[in-house]
Image 1 (cartoon, rainbow, N blue to C red):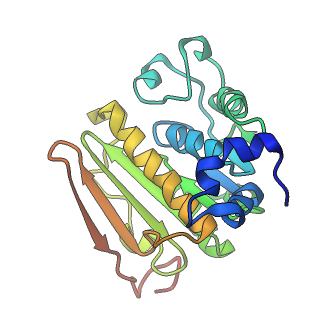
Image 2 (tube, rainbow, N blue to C red):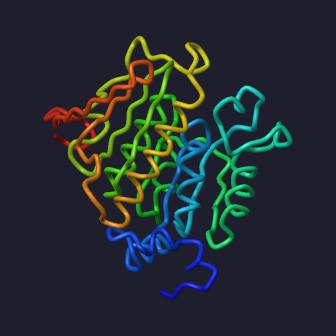
Length: 245
């Protein structure tokens, strides 16, 4: 796989980076990534994946751009109000990097279509805020043997984990928590979406290129109010109904 002169200039800082270099950039160019949710986390993650040169981004989201999104969903502008998010995102991402392809899917990922959306990609990023979608994408990733980068935010706290086989996301969250909160109900500081979404993209780049040590089997929790992070290992649940423990 060769790079044009424009690509060599574009990716110059990657190409001189020991852990990426030419081979790593080739892997990025050949990669196909599914981003589930083009909202608070999917927006910054999508921007950095596109900028990094990930060859194909498949975006799945059913929603249109709402003015309340603009506080944190940095892919969109006032002129995008009422426009399908995946349509606006595709235009923005290909404007940022015309060397990539974007596959917009204006649909919610469900148990019925998850396998189809996951098929043909190398890894999946999930930044959605409802547990039914998280459970469906996790099950599809386990069945297809695809790594899952999962992120979540609320109020001033964010978390990110990488699941590849065992443990899976359902080992961490076996059932929908009875006190589950959404950002629309409890609020979220806008910049936190950028922090966690960017870290999701970083974990994806590490997984694709083989650089460093991804957060596989671990969960990193970030408290923005105290500016503190902690990382915990996720144990395998022997009774997990998805990965079998």
